[in-house]
Image (cartoon, helix red, strand yellow):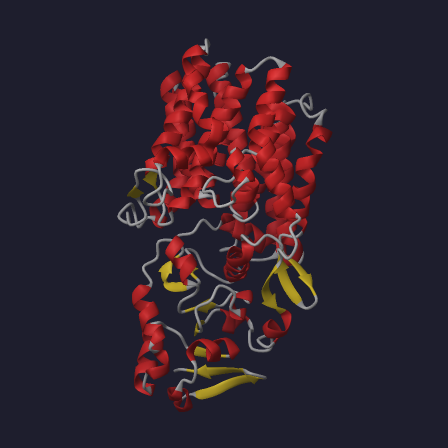
Length: 533
C-alpha cells in the first residue's frame, strides 16, 4: 500500500499547503515549493514501510475493466472539430460547471462565492476543482481532467487489488443487479456508471475511501491499533474528504465512530479529532452552521417513486445483495459479523435518511456501505471456486453494462464551441473575470469558460446544491419587460456591472427594449456586452 499512501498523502498535503499559501503568494514557485515540502512529509511518514505487490500479480485479469475505464478517462473532455466534447453523457451538465469553477477559483478569494449564484458563498466541495486550478498553471485543462481521472483510476484499482485481489476489483467497479440487462432505468448503478467518472470529487474520494476501509478493517479484524502516524495520516485523509466529497466524509465519519465504539481504543478518538478539525469548517459552512436543513429529508425508501412496489423496487435495484445479510448468523468470527452488521446498518439508515434535495444522490453514501459490506463478506469466502462464482454473480451484469455504455455510438455531447468562446477572448482580462454578469441561465454559457460569475446559472445545479433560487429566476424571466430604471435597480441589487446579449440571450429572452438606454462596451459578431452602471 506504500505507493498508494505516498501518492494520496502527496496530493492531499500539496492541496492543503497550496490552499493556504495562495493568500500569501500566488505563483508557480509557490506550487513547486509546496510540492517539495509534500514529498519530504511523505518520506518521513513512510520511510520504514515496505512496498508490497503480493496481490497485484494477476492484474491482467482485470483488463476487461481497464479497457472501458481507460477509454472513458481519455475521453472525459476533449477537443474535436472546433468543439469541446464529453464522451459520457452524464458529464454533459457537470463538466462545464467544473471547468467554470476551476477557472473561477484562479482569481477568487477565500471563502469563494458560488459563481453561478454569487450572492451566496460556495457550499459545494471544491478541493478537486482547486487541484485542477493548480495544475492548469502548468498544462492545459484539456489534459488536467484526463490526468486526474487516470490518477484516481490507477490508485483506486491498485488499492482494490491490494485489498482483495482481482475479485474485489470486479465487485467494486462492476456491481449491478441482473435487472440491468433488461432495463437501464435503475436507481442503483455501479461506481463507474454512477459516480466515478461523472463526479469529479470521486476521483480522489474513491482511493481515499478504499484506504480508510482497509485501515478500519485491519483495526477491527487484526486488532492493529492506530499509531501516532496513523492518527495523523488517516485523520488528514478523512478530514480532507469533507472538502473533496462531502457524502463520502459523512459515511466514513459515521462508520469510523461505529468501529471505534466496538474496539474502544482512545487512539481512534484522536484520529476522529484530527479529522473533525479539518472537516468541520467545510461541514459547518456548507450547512450555514447546521442551521440549513432543507436538504435533509426522510423517505420510506431511497429514490422510490410513488406507486412502485417496495419489494420489487429493492430487488430490481439491488438483486442478490439483499439476500447476503441473511447469512450473518452463520458467520463464526464475531468481528467480521459485527463489521457486516455495521455496514448493513449504514446502508439501511441511508435508504431512508436522504442528505440532499435529489434523493438519487444518496447513492454516493450507499455505494460506500456496499463496499464495506462486500469487502467483508468476500473475505469470508475461502474456496476459490465459490469466490469465482460469487464474483460472477455480482459483476457480470455490470461488466456488460459498462462495455455497452462506453462504446455505444453517438454518445459524445458538445459542451462548448470554440468559435463562441473565442468571441469573448478580447473582453476577458483579469479584472473583467472578477465581475458579475447578467446572462441567460444555462449550464454551458461561454462566460463560465473564463471563470466569470453570472447572476444566476443553471437551475439544475442550483437545485441539486440546495440553493433557493426561484425568486431570482422569476425576476430574470421578467427581464425583457423591465424598464430601464427597473433593469438598473436589478443590476445594482445583484452587483452585476455588465449584461451579456448574445445568440443565447436572444433565443432565451428575445428582445430587451430597455437595453437601448445602456452603453455598449464590447461587440464581436452577434455578441454585445452592455455596461449597466
